Amino acid sequence: MTRPATPSWLRQQERSNLAILRLMVWISLTFGRAIGRVVLYGITAYYVLFAPRARHFSREYLHRALGRWAEWSDGFRHVFSFASTIHDRIYLLNDRFDLFDIEVIGADPVHELAAAQTGAVLIGAHLGSFEVLRAVGRGRAGLKVAMLMYEENARKINATLEAINPAATQDIISLGRMESMLEARDKLDQGYLVGILADRSLSDDPTVDCEFLGEMAPFPVGPFRLAAMLRRPVFFMTGLYLGGNHYRIHFEALADFTDTPRSERDAAIRAAQQHYADRLSHYCRLAPYNWFNFFDFWQKK
Image 1 (cartoon, rainbow, N blue to C red):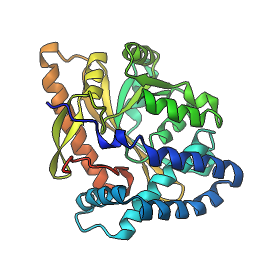
Image 2 (tube, rainbow, N blue to C red; image 1 turned 90 degrees about the vertical axis):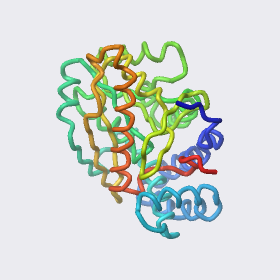
Image 3 (tube, rainbow, N blue to C red; image 1 turned 45 degrees about the horizontal axis):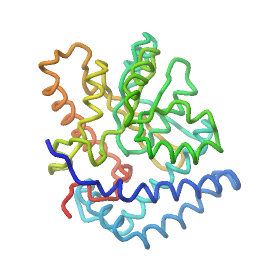
């Protein structure tokens, strides 16, 4: 187990994410989705041309996911997919489900836990759109979703989105506070699905190396330790962007810490992390332009 230096994704402070988000808010509300998607091509070209570090790390990831040399067009598709999910977030937050074709796979066990007021932990990644799940949850009775986020990112995103739909901020739990786990437990006791992304860490988060896309890479322990302490079933979740207005949400059972003895917890967490990395590898290969990695994830530099 290691404690890495401040990761490059945090040093970059999600610059591209927030910049694209703010611009897309204005374009989307002013001109609508069709015009906004035209503008996305210009925004994507700008980032591909003038963000050389992001372009380099995008190509390194795509080489692994595609199993071949990544061309310039692959990098463009990667950034365009990223921008598209951010653009669509504006409409999803405003319950404009009529604009989208959303398919859901493997949700029956999750619905059963929600209906029984048991709740479950959803562990995802920066893969596709987590917002599409939260949006679908708001539109379906009995499926409520709360999101655990790093406090600084939650503050920035909430500040940007509050002008669009203030209700969208109410189901976000900020990480890094003593009350975070208690708030998550309370949500679970109310039948919520509590989601957290587990493919990035803060500087003081312990990590372990897992095999991912054919090579060892560091993954944070915190999300899995939290799930184990909450003693809940854990599902891998991703909302893949398939182009146009199409999304496909996948749920897969990942682990169940409900009855895990304390003496076996560390081994169960380690097994769950590798299972998570395996499923993330699978979906990165299935939909390679969906994992929004624009930094040195394998820490080779």
